[in-house]
Image (cartoon, rainbow, N blue to C red; front, side):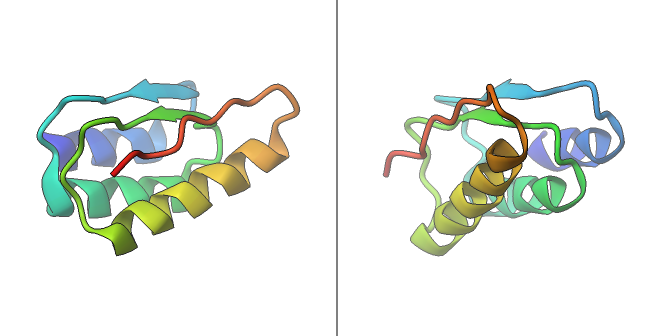
Length: 82
């Protein structure tokens, strides 16, 4: 699931928007996604509503996506809602 997708996104730099809302990714999947944003700077829009992940992981993902967005003038960001 999420871990396999995360691995693919590490090398696929054509994706700039991810909407994963209402998927049951969980903490392990969310950690794998956080690792993606450290190497893939093209993802500037992220939808993760209705997730059950820890606050620390959501904060990390928010920070990484915001850093990506800051590099792209027209980027948008949908914060994680807990």
